[in-house]
Amino acid sequence: MKPILAALTLCLLAACVTPRQGQTVEIRAEQVLAVSLSALDSFTAFEHRRRSDVPALVRDVAYRVRLEAPKALDSANALRLAYKGNRNAENQAGLLTALAVVESLVSEIRVWVPVTTKSPQNSSNLVIDDLIRESRASQTVTAQSWVALVPVFVDLAREVFAVVNRTREAVKQDAEWTLAEEADFAVKLAALKTAEHWRR
Image 1 (cartoon, rainbow, N blue to C red):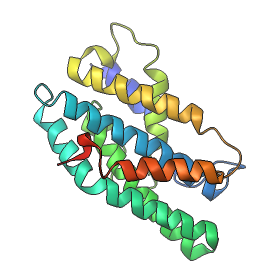
Image 2: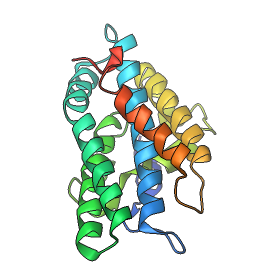
Image 3: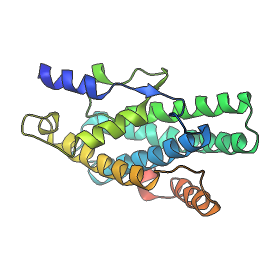
Image 4: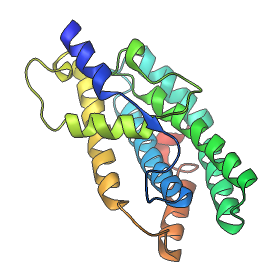
């Protein structure tokens, strides 16, 4: 068990909220929002389908996500658009703060990770990078890996990781979203308010 936790700790080394070298704040915000929305949506859909056999922890987290995520994503997206319209330090700070709130929700859905190895709340860690690293690692599963520990968490993690991998590939970008991509994200964001698995 200790080697598994040690490996997880190494896998969960977090990056900073700021963009990577050569990447703008806007592009990083778009990537974080796209991956976060997909991960949160996948988590709530899984919990909705499997409510009868998921642990109470998963149901509790899903309730909080349904309560807080639509507002947090709306706020982060509105601040992203404000920053896009006026790229000043104040708008950038507001955007980064809003993204940190979204990332704290994404951190909560990682219920398959022992609490001691999760990124600390309210830190400058980038939860999305943790989730992406985990999703890459999940593609090589062995009998000794953490994935063999709890069957429901295995199914949940695999489902979220599959969505994260697909989204990560889709949002590999070196330019800001086009109008069509902006519209596509707006539609996905609006769907959170009407989708069956988002109802409390």
